[in-house]
Length: 340
Image (tube, rainbow, N blue to C red; front, side, top):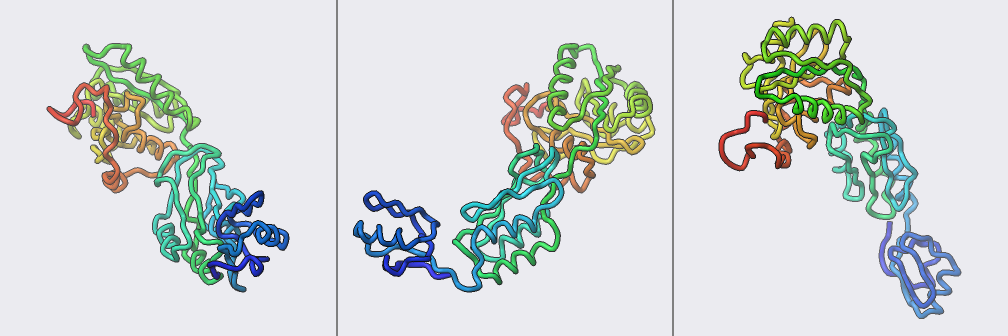
């Protein structure tokens, strides 16, 4: 591709690199310059234009953008028609965005002319949402550059994992100081959290804050209510692996995979398993509608994506979220809040 100033008389058939206005003549950026355009520009006193001449092996920006977008798009994504060297990818279903970060980096490393931008990995998305965009910076790229970009993606690099777990059981433990209105509000907030995923609460149980009571409620959630996922909201935040909620999971015959996470708010989250169903010991911040670490784990599990210790410990980078102003003890000073 050749780029630079060209006499108007020699510009016919080339691509205008910039918009040109002269009198009542308007030549739009990226448009092909026709004989009439050149004549009108010359009549308006324009001597030269900045134009682009494509070489024989060049691939136009739209064609190149579409090719790369189609190569990286996997399940749950569709590629929109390209325009001005850009091709966008949209979700066709609600779910969690999965990315091959290495492949995306490889595409962006091919040449400065080729760019691929995406939403963050594991971002919850809805149908129709734009999740990525391919942009070709110049008006064309050499065919060999496009070939290298496509070779950097041996398999689709983006996909939407659809929500699969639909039946969620909720267990709330109670202590004398916990008002019923707090539990009621927690359930409303949680139902709102589930709404975009298509999941719903199939059972809601309130039990004393004791391990055996939690165990009984969990067994009932799995056997009687056939829940795909159980969430336990404790009247008191989990403080140790031997605390009431983890002890209740183990007493029910399940196991604890990990306690704690490098996401704030959300530090005191626990994940476990009972008969193949995930169990979340919710941190206190999960009672708030604001985004916190609970959301990150919840959405992955609803999409039936594995969440283990290795996944949790990788959440620290970017894990410092915005302060929840309603927290009784903000992180900016004083003792840590029990319900984190």
